[in-house]
View 1: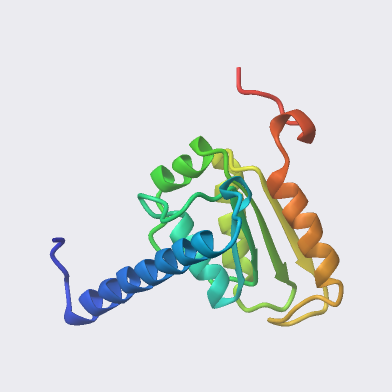
View 2: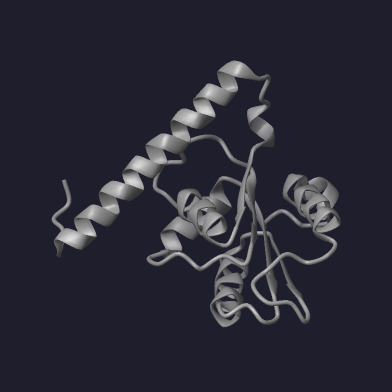
Length: 163
């Protein structure tokens, strides 16, 4: 087991592992109960839920298959290395980061979007004007557009294969 710098760090990591196991168990239960096409799973969430989705996506081992992410107003996870982002690229995952002009984390989200894009993650980043840390009025349409973006392939997105 890793050596922790403090009791608080150990508690945080144990909590993260518990949350991951809880989410993995919920996914497995859902797959057993419903007809889930594992090629059409997206992680997502609003605010802290978006943070959790991004954190899980960047883990060493995905807890379940995932095509990408759709997040709204998330805090940017700490400790995201270029290696973790490169793994997202290798897995062909795509993402949509939606946020608002008055979200207190906008600058961090803009920086994170630039890092993802520069590493090669197909990303759509959209900022909604004149809204605080909240949902845009046309959220349903934005979510549909985001899901369509995540499920695009290189063939139907206009992206070129790497030479």
